[in-house]
Image (cartoon, rainbow, N blue to C red; front, side):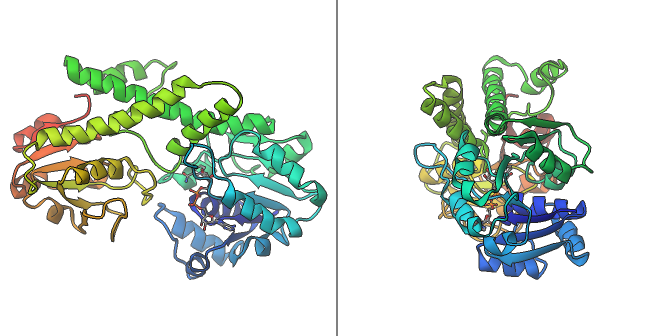
Length: 425
Ligand SMILES: NC(=O)c1ccc[n+]([C@@H]2O[C@H](COP(=O)([O-])OP(=O)(O)OC[C@H]3O[C@@H](n4cnc5c(N)ncnc54)[C@H](O)[C@@H]3O)[C@@H](O)[C@H]2O)c1
């Protein structure tokens, strides 16, 4: 079994480390945040990911996983080094590689010859090649192994992936990395660094485009009397189209789609190609967020400074506590600017949100809706569907319901007294 260092104890690093340890490897995870390492050592997972606390606890008990402060402390004894570092966006849409480079600088002095530096962070095409050039003296080899897990289903996605992509400059290095996953039953694609990097960006850009396409059709449905649920079911049966990622919503967001789409347009521009399809997709998503906020305003137009909006859902989707580029926050931000008073509830969010300084975060979904003029549902938590909507309608000042995820049944809600608006229905 291999000795593995994971650099970065975030959503990807912690999941990768715990899952590789569960496959029998000896894993050390490093982070540069002292409090994060301390809390992990105390058995506390610093974010919400279903099942991860139990998995981490099991592999820590079996001495397959441990945590250290500082990347070099994990890397000095390892043969494989997984970089799971943040790669956020710069203002111009390009990737900010400063965290990534800082991590590399920390491990470079301790890399053993013939060890493998595996990049799991999402990076622009050309990064692995450049990294290999900077590591020449160490005699370590670079492999690109993009991660496709989605938050909320991370363990399952890691251990039962749709595919494993490994990009390298030699078959030998790819195979060494492929061996780490030998107990996982999934197709393994061996390719070049460049292809692996582009596969990751393309996957996210394509999914973002698919969602925008569905949201555009949903808008057309609203203008023509068609029903988006029927339309997406009708096309989803066609195997060339597929039924996944077909739900109309408030607009896409999250820690990956916005930055990866922006980064890919930047990569294309640097290569001399204007990727207008993707640029328009990004632009149309912003318009769709505006349109969703406008829907709420239209339902509660008389804003005399006392119009109260209740919001359920703050994260970028259900099943996570991740607020990065959340469409919910984007929409509530627009409403705050128009002077609406907002109470919000989310099963995983407490405290305050910097971009929503005037929004009150409540701890109970029923408290959240009291005396509200509209309820806007922004994420698809199953918990919301299980609430007593009759009580909700009765406790509101005006029972208007804007269901941006189409999780409620329109006629059932109307029977309970709601004025109901969904997306594309
Ligand atoms: N979150 C996802 O769903 C997901 C899925 C696939 C790919 N990715 C990609 O994986 C990468 C990591 O994403 P994430 O969501 O796990 O990020 P994250 O912000 O949750 O975690 C990054 C971690 O790295 C740590 N860190 C930063 N600099 C460090 C250093 N020098 N040494 C040690 N630790 C350091 C941070 O403290 C943090 O704990 C990104 O490139 C992202 O695009 C993310």
